Length: 307
Image (tube, rainbow, N blue to C red; front, side, top):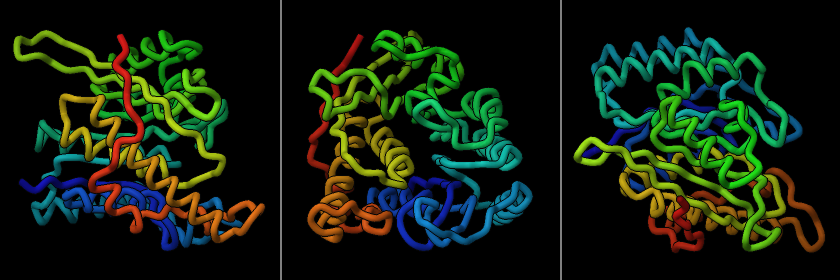
């Protein structure tokens, strides 16, 4: 059966960010993707220069109305990422709510992009919109540690703290929460970072159960752009294929990330030459070259079930 995704994200002409980072891997895995570009830039903002346009909330509404007029607005998933405008974000919420009324089984996957490492890189006024309007209608969210702490008001210093934060996020709405990166110490040493996930499920008898997992992920000494968009898209895909097995969905997702990033960094160092730091163009994700790994990733990141 055809599975259709509405992806409302940024777009770049050169490279892989936003919709460019999410659409190809989803299509490779069999999803039909309709893309609305929240911005259209020449390239991502990690370059020295960029040019382009930003979609307004009114323009988003016009595009959505066009889809509705043709009666082709049945979606199984909505996927969103980086946004800088409150009215645009509120319009996204309105669209998600309307689509959920049309299809109560629709799953909204949200990367709540707010900031990292203690500082915000979106305007402060987006925070209450995410907390009070976006997260409550989301089904799957992929915050980093800073974003999870910001949304819940609770700091994460231990794994127990992280579990409590994920439970607080569940209480706000989403059934699946993956903290994509944290500052928790890895049992495998300094070359790994810790990610955690939690999935709340309803048993056939109506009782609830929660599966929680921990991943130790290889660190890479480079700055990539578009990896968060790829991660959210892959989590969407693999939770679709393994809806009741967060452990497997996370292993597949994190393994895809590993393969794409390793291929990218190897290529970037080859281009840069010995002893030279790769440039932003050289660090563009090697997405097309990773097609086979996206389709059937060798598992290199195993998840541990935690209590």
